[in-house]
Amino acid sequence: RIKHSGIGMDDSADHSALHHHLGREIGRLVLVLLPGTVVWAAVSRQSKVVAAFAQLGDLQERSDRQQALATKAVEVDKQWFMIGVTNMILSAYILGAFPNLYYLYFTPKVLTLIIVRLVKFYRKKQHFLLWDFCYWANFLCIFYCWVMPTSPAVFRTVFMCANGPLAWSVLAFNHAMIFHSYAHMTSVVVHVSPLLLSYGLRWYAAPMSESSMGAKHFLVCDGDAESCLNVSFQDLLCGTLVRFYLWWLVLYYIWIFVALGSYIERHAYQTLWDRILVMKPVGPFLQKLLKSWPKLLVQLVYLLVHLVFSAGTMCVAVVLWHSQLAHFMFVCTIGLSTIKNAAEFYFDVIGSKYEEAAANAKVPVSKKILSASGALSELSEPMKK
Image 1 (tube, helix red, strand yellow):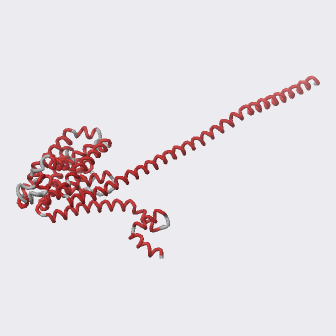
Image 2 (cartoon, rainbow, N blue to C red):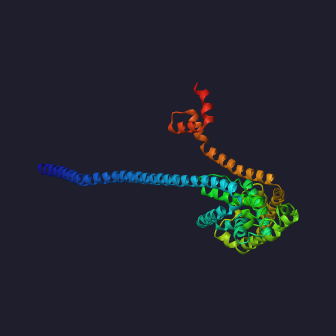
Image 3 (cartoon, rainbow, N blue to C red):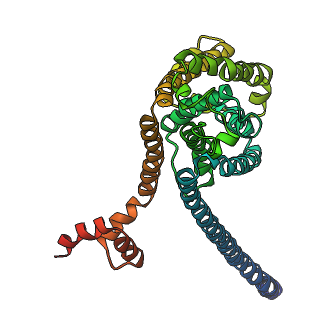
């Protein structure tokens, strides 16, 4: 019994020693792993913090870039605004003081803007837009002024194109004289400048006297000034269609739609056809035809619509050819329409600022708007009382 009791006491002591040993080993293991666990947790937490700061840094850098871009854009737009206003002043002065010399200003202005547009359009895959009629008509104006200034037939073609489809496109496409926008100002120049050129030459370059500057360089009529009034409707309209417009129409269809149609579509180049498809009222009509007719046939229909539009506007141009007063009123109407469209653009953009100014006149921006807008300042006075 004493022996067995001794053995039991020895077993109990061994188990106690074993538990103590295991506890000590576990403690050591914890002591070993604890620093690593703490370091891992700290690194993990730090990495998240660093990532958060890095993200904030990227956002800040992006914000700085956007702010720098906006600042640069503002400076560029200010310069274009000054150029746009200066162009309007110079155009009005030259056309009023030296109407038969307007071509000296017209030529470099148009060529420069079209070249810049070509570069910009090429980067955006829009350079095939320069095959449109308006650019060809501008080149015809330059051709007349510098190559065939003594051809009355060419001038009649210039006059009908400038006062027909070119001028009426301002109303059709809502071109706006947005002074700070190169794109808008270029469109206005391309469509309105030939109109101004034709007005100056038609009424002030006719050989009314041998001493006039127009008589020495330009010949817009076959004889004296009275001969201009004897030009027939058929000569003005049909002559323009046969000499220039129909040639452009056929060439455009064959080159842009037939020869290069698949190439343009494959490379996602843009033409006026793409814009017309989303414009009312012609766009929905053409899209409906595309569902059942071949594309080339629908594009032919589109050019026939273009022909009807051009011929109709040229009929109005015939009236302008015979009346300086009507021509002058037409020029003013087209010019004022570009200004009206610009006014709608500007006040659509800053209209919300007017509401803020009316609600809180103490904000610095609101003070500027109130000081600039007499109407808003007067209308807001009763609200203050």
